[in-house]
Amino acid sequence: MTDWTDSIVGDRMTVDREFNDRVRSSEFSSQEWGLIMTATELDIEHADDPERARIVADTEKLPQIMPELENVRSQMSQMGGASGGEPGSSGGGIVDSLKGALGLGGGGGVDQDRVNAAEELTQAYADALQSQLASKNKWEQVRIAYQE
Image 1 (cartoon, rainbow, N blue to C red):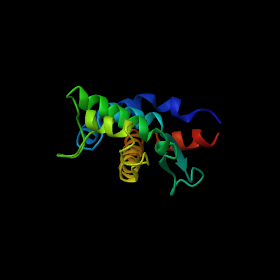
Image 2 (spheres, helix red, strand yellow):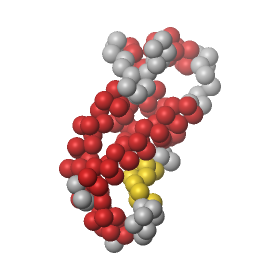
Image 3 (cartoon, rainbow, N blue to C red):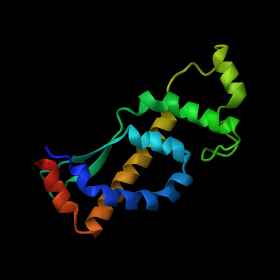
Image 4 (cartoon, helix red, strand yellow):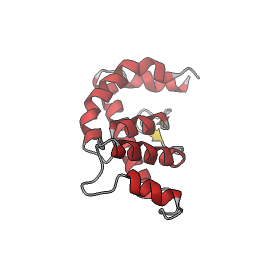
């Protein structure tokens, strides 16, 4: 199979620019979003059926990167530059880092709410990308290229 994503680089850049506002209004910083998208693969579900085919975000690797997202958030908080996140929420920081170092943290589990939020945002991105391709009359060509 050829790498169908190579043919849509320009479209992804357009969607990235348009999606920035959505990321800013989410709980994730732009740095966190970058990590999330690095761990997310785009796939086409039902590619053989023009009526049901759609771009989906394969997010199975997200739980593995969540600790690194917390590191990014903690570093940003320590620098005073935390963006995203819910108002009044702890973004990590020195106290949380010390608690973690002392074994008093939240147990080191994956925050499933953040995984779910990342999954929803990545699927919204995939939907926006498919809309972009459809508006440029490229969707059918991309769908077919995916199958090759």
